[in-house]
Image 1 (spheres, helix red, strand yellow):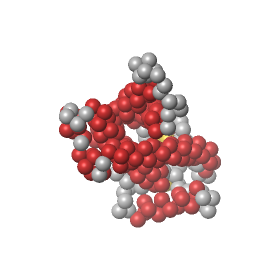
Image 2: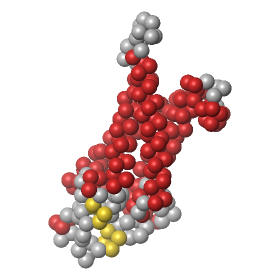
Image 3: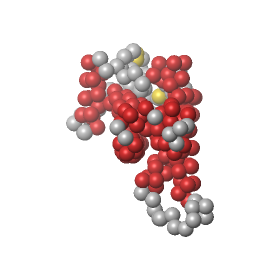
Image 4: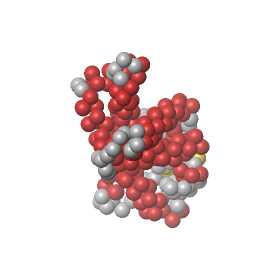
Length: 237
């Protein structure tokens, strides 16, 4: 079995074998990140649209304060996980770098992106198999998750710094974000919009994972538990 070094497309003409794709640190990161994202999305939505008014003295009815505390904690945890993931890009296997460095200059890779789009739109009966992410998934992970994480982290840290005040070290580190976006409201709006980007990304990611596990020629869901990408023989003759 041959694996293309650029696109990671699998040539199954000579048979298939399991491929160890996702290392344990990547798998642990994936599930911890999912928990952090879930906490951020729920509390972020409640911050933007509180369920009830905070009636009474704030030291008695501190519900909204707890929501913000969980949101800040989840956001800082997500940031730490992202930094940890960047570290593993440098020391992990070649699949660990897939979503951070898509081969945007490769025409073969772009053909794979469009072929995968046609497959998902039921314009093609089948699509090539890949050892890691398929090109469309790789592009989506890079554009919506990697770049999206960077934007939501810097805007989130800026808003967190604002809660500490303009004369603090937090603002000295992240005050430039307000200058970059123009004002605090613009930062808040971008941060809030990114929450919906993450919601859409999560829904698409879960759907595609289940869809590929059922209809594709390789395992998807189990690979994030065992690390092994296994191929179904009935899809390759």
